[in-house]
Image (tube, rainbow, N blue to C red; front, side):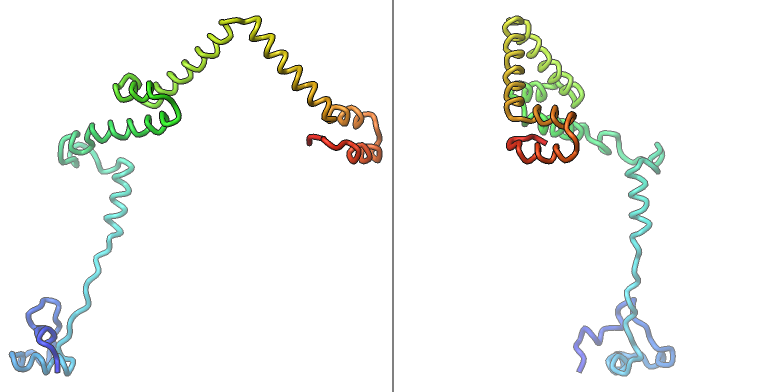
Length: 187
């Protein structure tokens, strides 16, 4: 026994009737025809989304957007608020690593985009280095040279210098012996 929904094939537009039974389509015969297979429901017609997807891809690249194809003012198509939010998010991602002062400058639109922000940061860093050198140049240079001397001495003590000097003078087999004998060698 068919349910009421299955019997109501006649009311839907996607119903197919066998041409030989079209004379006897009545309320009583619909269920019988459905059971016998004379009345069937047509398969759903599929509507491909491929052309739509292709056109959207073209539009995202800027095609099909000439003046007569635009509906809506520029503000509606790309709001300035959205542009502002995107710009701020870029700056805030960068500023996460830096200080609160720069964050507030970005918010106040002093640093309006990424390029200006990076220029500001590079300039500030250079200024800091310059002021450090100008503060007491002889002392700073003396400390720098002293540190370099200390590092050079440690490298020499570790044996890598000895190894490189001997390697130039010794034959191939002797180098292997030197490699085994030098414990703290840097490669």
